[in-house]
View 1 (cartoon, helix red, strand yellow):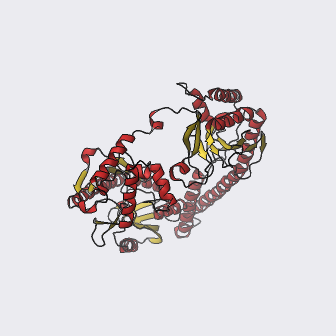
View 2 (cartoon, rainbow, N blue to C red; view 1 turned 60 degrees about the vertical axis):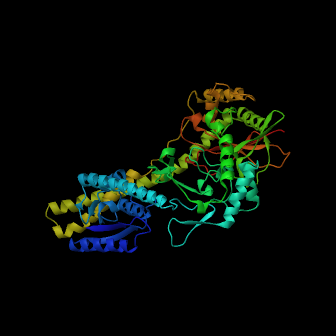
View 3 (tube, rainbow, N blue to C red; view 1 turned 120 degrees about the horizontal axis):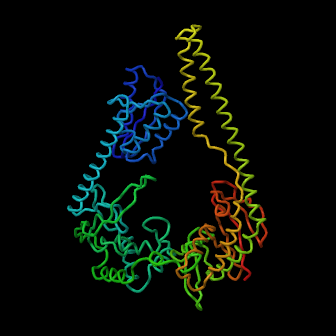
Length: 548
């Protein structure tokens, strides 16, 4: 039998030799049991808590679907995964492909072993997390820092957890606190630091949120207790997202925080720190957009055509709101500096929607273009499925022919064993390929009442264009969200006509998850060559230009 070996170790603190030791153990087992090793896969410094980021495991599963081996051999089942769900899922998929899973110490894996080993692995991870937190708590009691690198400090070589002040960065911290207490806003401070090209703690730019942080999480430069000579730990806990494998932070209640004085790490005076915290608590509070409904129909949909950031209100002049790129406003790092009148953008968008998207010929053109692309993609998918089906039929016929030859006594067992084994493996591979092959897309047509409903939605949106408040009627906003995915404000020189690109959802019209692309200039539809038409691309794109 052909086998593949898989090995893994968890962290960079372990030795690379661990992989070679696991390979040697598995090869010795294979030699003892007469197994033919045809492949070896490994993941180095990768946790078994998740399958995300495990390139070696993914390559092995791809090879398994291609029928490259009959058995997967590991030192122990926890090398594959310590997560109950992941281990059971891997075993289920291998079982479907007809591939056996073996562990050197446990033998062939079955449903009971998978359940028990998955439970043991999950309990091990939970116990390990408790012990790590206990150790970090001890680090705090010793007066050392248990977190990552903090801006304004650098680690002491050879002394884990000990920090010393970085005078260059500490000067920036003092400047931030003095400017904030002196009346400067975090936005103004961030923009000045970006102009001076001061390197930020992380990322490319300073932003207001870097300085502000969160009142709930008690983070950000202004709220960092370390600058006042006090180490605070356990403000947040980390939880792994099961859908992405990424660690996500969750705030802990303040009574779970652990702190200790560290006067040698003080950068700002206690008086300056307390004044900054007082101002922060006075100015801070819930974000307005999180506590009330949006006042404008386009709230949350406007995007900058230069950097992709959102567009937000800059100020109000003569009773009219003006918007600007948020990245430019917060960090001063976007080249899209023009300030726009929000009323003009709303008129441009809604006049364009009413004038162009109620045309039945235009809607029919969208559907026709989309169907042509679906037919083109379908022809390739149909040819692929047909090729697999024909080859599978030939393999089955050949298998039956050889097997019947052996049953009727025309061939010896030694003569048919190898060709039957090869045909059986190829049959399994082709069946798996056929099951996973993408089905050809279906063409779509307008629903009988879709056109009338679509026109009514656009008319409702035009009525919803209010320059004061939408009140409690949220139906027009919901209709807008069904039709429009984003409105991109394209950079134009001051005084030039406003130019926006509307990215809409044609699925609202035809009732399918399909999104062809087109471009609109002055009410005329032209082919959009820059955007490749694809059923997976969720955008209808057209451009509108204001008359002003």
